[in-house]
Amino acid sequence: QVQLKESGPGLVQPSETLSLTCTVSGFSLTSYSVSWVRQPSGKGPEWMGRMWYDGDTAYNSALKSRLSISRDTSKNQVFLKMNSLQTDDTGTYYCTRARDYFDYWGQGVMVTVSS
Amino acid sequence: IQLTQSPSLLSASVGDRVTLSCKGSQNINNYLAWYQQKLGEAPKLLIYNTNSLQTGIPSRFSGSGSGTDYTLTISSLQPEDVATYFCYQYNNGWTFGGGTKLELK
Image (cartoon, rainbow over all chains, first blue to last red; front, side, top):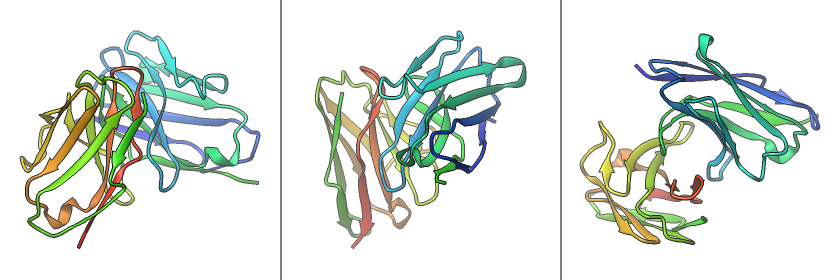
């Protein structure tokens, strides 16, 4: 069955870089795209960026200067790196299988930006 | 495209017919989905392409709309439907609405 699982540090220092990994199973990264979505506590989700099935990427314009998404198809993994983190980057980060809509989601990883 | 959901909080009784609204700042061309999010869980896809029911979702959930105005309807509210509901458009970029929190009266 389709599964996605996020992993990474729960606490990041301000101005530091966040690195997250999404490990997928039950589908191929060369057939489906994967998006990263984040959600501050008590607020609506925000699309961050997308790794297309063909290896191309797309980013939210508000995050583009700080965000990088890559993948390793041999390991079924998609990676997120975002630099210059601030306190308002605190929230839950999800990876999702992406058609145009997101049909499967990981459980999410809570990231707190704090010193 | 910005999405505005209303109301932000809705109280209803078990068995009620419930309607949630989502309005886009531009034409969405029916590229609209609805998600249900229960406390502490990831969002769950209910409806895609305005009115297509995701596999495994109860038939009491339905979607409708066109242009800039879309609706999620729950025909008979059940206790397990207590959640926050988000609309999401994928016509031009990918954006979510702010959510409607549905609670039992």
